[in-house]
Amino acid sequence: MAGRNKLVAANWKMNGSRADNERWLQAFRAAPAHCETIVCPPYVYLQQIVQGLAGTAAGIGAQNVSERTAGAWTGQVAAEMLLDSGASWVIVGHSERRAACGESDDVVAAKFERAVAAGLRPILCVGETLAQREQGRTQQVVAMQLDAVLRRCPAAQLAAGAVAYEPVWAIGTGRTATPQQAQEVHAAIRSRLASQDPAAAAVTRVLYGGSVKPANAQELFSQPDIDGGLIGGASLVAADFLAICAAAAR
Image (cartoon, rainbow, N blue to C red; front, side, top):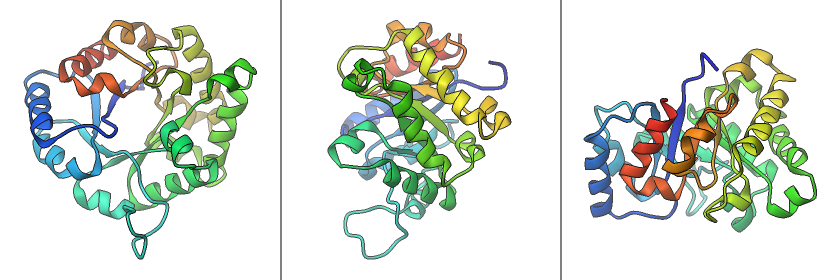
């Protein structure tokens, strides 16, 4: 849709080294990204990526944030610390954290609220498991995840960041939702947002995440409600990530 620029975010997950990151940065800086991009490295490499992307248009994001303000919370990282480190975006509610770290919808919503209050732009991840899809509960599950945030924050605050639909069964598995399956859920997400604020829903970027690769990116991104991608494994290779960015610009 006109008015929503494509956005492609790299989620490096728990990968990288200073040497590997430098090679990635050199390759990324040497080629145009074609669309708005965000790079989300592990916390320990934020400074390296901030310095390495200085002077480019790329945004910097973190992969997680505490729902608490700074204080006696060993091992956690506050939103204000991320801003101080040079990040302007943050991923909240990734399915790996929901499943492996036990983050409930309420915890994710609290993280979203805390990030916004501090001035970060959150990418809210939502999505269903394979069992939930097979039970026909995809839209119900996604709506519950969205509603937990909307009870705390107006839809306009989601528009300032992004929503990422990531079917859990397609993350890192090589399986991908068909463009039609993905579009159906993206349209439902936009409709849910529109029930609170039609204007915000029209400009909110809804990204697809789930085994996006250069070979399937263009078909996915051509759907009317898919506004880019949250890219995991393919983002670790700069050439692949740039190819996905190029597909988003077509």
